Length: 205
Image (tube, rainbow, N blue to C red; front, side, top):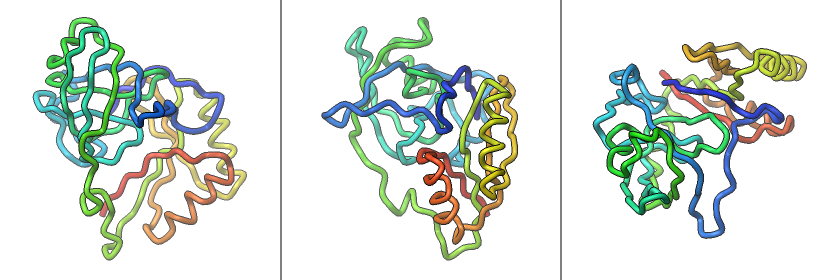
């Protein structure tokens, strides 16, 4: 799903803010709806902007997060079922229902604090490796074709086979497709040796 304006490209990994010492996270929230209604999320669910869900870059799917608008003190609990937002300083992308609950739909963005209130069960997030699953890895996302090409070249020079995935908002994702589940550990290990430790993994049959 996929709304990705600008992203810093000095390093070839998805931008993650450092959590606060308390385990909370502060940054800017945005929200999405409209044309994304009814589309498939990164978790495989169908997006419904009227439900209390959200996109986060790293938290496991089905994690429940309390989002507090630091500008007015209002808060809401949402469930993570998508990935994003990939823009510097933004840490969560809320559904319209989530954004409405903390009175930020008008402004479009708001500074928020995230607190995890319920972690996802391992059974909910772990893939069934007994089945023949294939993985796709999003290694990076860029608004600059030059930076995307640079990462692609780096991966190719290290024996990987990256491809571009183009979004409808001009972001280029650098992807590794069709990786068998048993090879996932080896592939992510190769990426870590290149300094790429934060990636997004999709599973499919």
